[in-house]
Length: 566
Image (cartoon, rainbow, N blue to C red):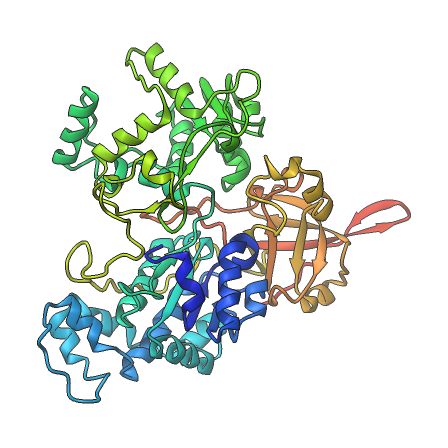
């Protein structure tokens, strides 16, 4: 997040796109509802009528995979109705002495063309996306698009939030760029109660990325390909380092099948349930010569492991986590690890010594000291500073720095902002007569990710014991389907059988299945198409068929009642 969670309660407009916030980030969702109670306007863009959408003043129920068209149309309204605040542009162009005509907040866009990067090209690409054009693509009424644009642009304290509903597409990077264009166009960045605020999907995702758990960077997003950055880490670690980035997880699966990868080491991940096109993934993992898995519980992935390394949970170790608002927080061991389990860093250090590189840390705080030396944004973050407060937000460059509550206060890290225009690209797999539904996946309120922890909890299993497919009442009526009847969901990659849940949470033509349930693993169905830049899979859109299974005389018979929703 560019801004902080504590700012949400004082925001005046909250725009949530691609995030089921109250169910998946309930603490942040609580702050959003508090802001609404204090008079804030809540706008939600989501194909499903989620809980947060039910609380919203305006629900933009766009078709899955059409985020770019929707966001571009919102920006079209902002540009054509001159809803652009010059004060932000003045701050970012060093024209502090520029005299704005008295009482005039919004002026001709020629000023922006002259003082920002790539605005001309951006404007040309945005102008064709009128609300009427977007309505044909997204199914959102043109007047609702105009209303959202005016609400978001006209209030200075406007915050934008997104989650995996934005990123898990073949256009995930474009979707994020469109969000960035929107906050820059409206000056909703670099100020309190504004910002571009991604809500991370798993615990410590922010911290893992900060520490270099990406194929092209060291800690602090210092590029592997940058000779200066590489030299710094080589000197610190006394070893030569490669100058070429590695590959992403989705690319690794294909590399196994092609013979380029023969061994793998997995920490705290369950790709045999979490990754798309599971049949493809299983085929790859069965081909590995060696697989080591480091985790706190057995998983579907450990079934393929040659070695399992028992790790300790968060309550059994010392260290830090970094949350979604960039806040580094200290954790303290509450109980000792059971059996042979060890903290992750101890396992890694022991392996490193066995492989010929001595890696010695007496305590977790020494690792934090090394991080602060090598990572500029963490330069002032040390364990003793985390004792007396709720943590520190990076960037925190030195020991006297209080941390940063919101980013880009005076300028962007690159200097001037640059608009990156993006075009609408349809999802990789369109519906047709055989597969007339759009299948989208996500999480339920009571479970988390692949269920390796939460599904061991009796209370959560009691609340949400089995996989259900959400289907709209109109679609269910056409199929002669009622809630709790079993159906087969089929895609070009496989099929699963689940019970139907007839609900208007999903619109016509869309079905939703959570991915927590190994006995009805929805990722047997999802497509392994990925964003060309980030390589993130398109979990949110693939073409599917729904086939009711009707019970007659004690025998399950298949009904080929596939319908067309075109």
